[in-house]
Structure formats: C-alpha cells, structure tokens
Length: 246
Image (cartoon, rainbow, N blue to C red):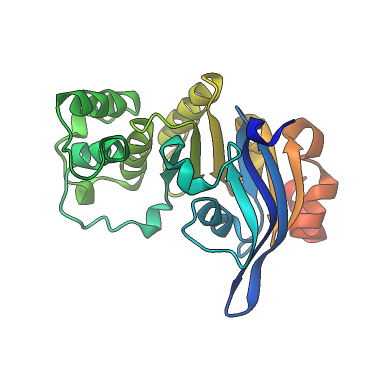
C-alpha cells in the first residue's frame, strides 16, 4: 500500500517527558476507513500518541504523515474530540456555539459563521440527540451530554479522520450506544476513526481494527487477527490476561 493510501503513517516516533520515554520507536500504519481502538494500560502513551499525531506534542524523533503529508498540511482533514477532563466546562457558552466552533477551520478566523454554518451545527446536534439542549450552558449539561456536544462539534468539520480521546469515559449506556452508532456510520461513509479506549470487553463488538500500546507498539491490525491472549499478555501482563478471560 502506498504511503498516501494510509490515513496515518508513523515512523520511529519517540516522545519523552523530562528525558523519560513516553512513546518509544513507534511504527504504525493506519489504513483509510477503519474504526480503530488504541488500548493499553494507564501510562502507556495512548493520549500522547493522539496528541503527537495532532502536533500538539512534539516528538524528539520520528515522523507522522497524514495521507502522505505532514499534519500541518492536512489540518482540515482531521477532527479531534479531546478527553472530557481536559475541557474547561465552566467557560460561559451554550451548546450551539460550541458546535459552531467546529466550522471555524473552514471559515478561517476572520469570517464569522453564518446561517449555513448554523444549519450544519443544528443538524449535528440533532444527529447526536442534543438539539433540545442547543441553548443550554455547557456547564449545566451532564457528562454524557457534554461528550455528545463535542462529538457534534467534530461532525460539523466533515473531516476524513476523527481522533477521539476516551469518548466513552463517564457516559451512560444510552450515550455510549448513541456514540458508537455514529462512529460506525462514519466508518461506513469511508471515514477513519481512531479512538483511545479502555473497555477491553467491547473492543470486538465496537471496532474492526486495534492497536496495542504500552510505551512501545505491541501489535496493530484487524481485531479478528490480533485481539488475542498473546497480545493482551504482552500489553497488560499475565494477571490482566486472566482477568479478561474470566
């Protein structure tokens, strides 16, 4: 497969904090059109990997290519849903305005969103089941509702790649089901979705591709091929393997 046919291609990526490696010599090829989970223990570097792809964190070595080019040349093709805990939910703004922020990338910072962008935002809110809350302050929403708002913000970007950092964290079962259904719809539309995920039990049900990570890359590929005891053991350790298989 040619490099430009990979949604994301990572070569020899190393990231360190205070000289301590957080990611070490990562090689990763993510095809277009997959719904991929990144799994690994706490401190494995999962969020760091997402932020390195987005150029939020600078690696000390290695390269990241998005559709064969550096991320800065492909910004408009990538949408990001951050960890819920990293967002200032007390910021005084309503749900509709948060979603409309997703249109800024296509408009630029000088031109303001108009009726077209408002319509797109309202449609995205309806898609995630939050249209009735469009005028609600985000600080007044539940955790699951807040997560849906940020998913709607990503949807209006109409990106080719969606990077999501623990989108199911702290949400109820109804919201989780709604989110995964939307992610599967995006995949069927040819989008590429990369999701930091913790619940190993749902990996085979939710995802078709998986990357095992624990500072180093352990394995990456189709769930049916590599989601197995051997890779779980390499990633989490023998005790965790036993717990997963109970």
